[in-house]
Length: 159
Image (cartoon, rainbow, N blue to C red; front, side, top):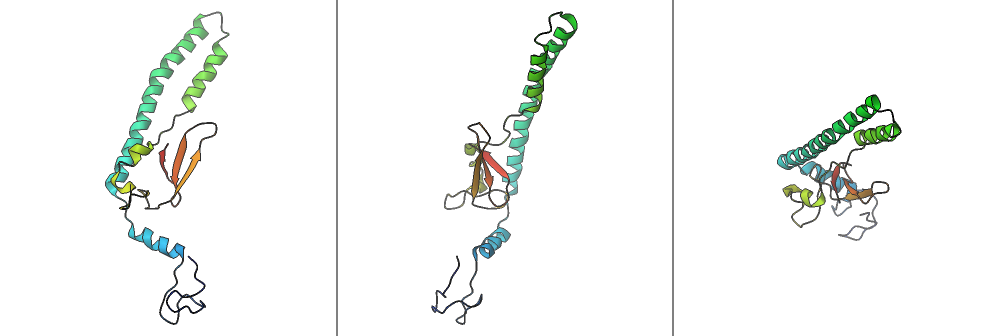
């Protein structure tokens, strides 16, 4: 908050320190001091990363179980069949399945089960930097909302 007058003695502000001894601090200084005090809970950060790795593993296992038979079917059509009209469509579908990945972030309910994701007042808090702001954005033409920390820009969860 920018003060034009001292809240103690009501003198107009000229410098960062008033003649009565009051020190004016802006929001950036206060936030910086808070970040220096905050230390992330290593157990929560490790659990968060483990959950993300599990989700990614499940996606790759699913892709392997779906893509390998699909690729074998394409190879069968290409080598043993005379009618190859489906071949271009199936190769495009195979390429899409390989390169398009589903969302690999935690869900909101799962994120808030972490102990350091909430402050003592019950407000949101980033588990990485302690920031309290959330920036929500949506992926183009989807209903998936991604929540990021406004301070460190890390993806926290999806809704």
